[in-house]
Structures are given as structure tokens and as C-alpha cells.
Length: 146
Image (cartoon, rainbow, N blue to C red; front, top):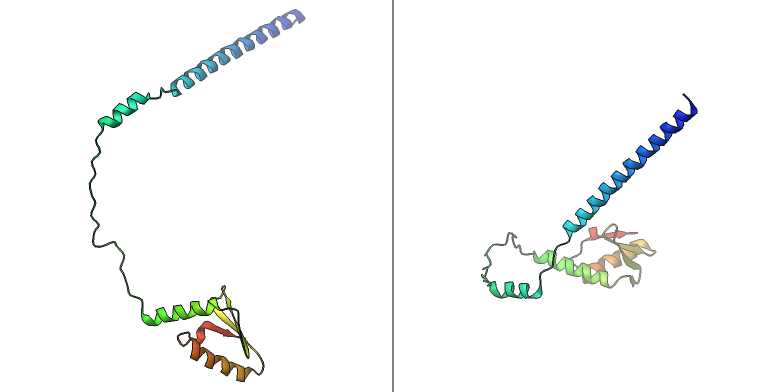
């Protein structure tokens, strides 16, 4: 191929690319214009809103509650209620320091931690007597003795 033919082919190829780009851009512009024109909707005027609200009539009906809600109401045993109240009362007093022992609460174990001072046997007996006298509903299973 001669150099002149190569230049002619390059010019024709370049011209074809420019024409294709112009056509694509014009199609995209037309598409954008039609999509924005479809999304614009006229807002109602205040007079049309007022006339609609005046013409509409609202009727209300009273709904009567049913006798059964789906929840079975159970009474809490007095022992459990008393135990819960005593546990809350003790938690509100913590940390509690007494002669021979201290009490804290470990939330990760959900138990009271009792640190008993030496002599352990005597002070453990003091703790058990104190527990029976003040918080009789709480069992020893709620306490970890250290």
C-alpha cells in the first residue's frame, strides 16, 4: 500500500469515528431530556387540595377490645417475689462491708461474691447467721464464698 492510500484510509476511519460519537451523544441527550420531563409532575394548587378535603367525609368506627389478648396472665409465687425483692435490696447496698466478710456482686456469674476474712470458719458462720437474719429468702446457692 502506498502512503497516500494509508492517509486516506486513516482520514475515513477517523471521520467515521467522529460521526458515530456525534450520533451517540445526540441519542444520550435526547434520552436525558425525556427522562427528566417525565419525572416532573405538577403540584396541586391549594384550591384543589381544599376542595378535596372539604368534599371528603370521615367516618370513624369504635373498635371494642376483646377479652383475650393472647397472653396468659400468671400470678407470681410469693416466695419468688420475696426472694427477688430481697436480692434487689441487697444489690442496692453493695459493696457491703461487715465484720468478718465483704459482699459484692459479679454480674457475669449473676452471683454474690463473699470474701470471708480469717478465721474462715468463724466468719463463715457469722455470714450464714447474718444472711438468715436479714435475707432469709436468699439461698446459699446465690453466693460464692472466697
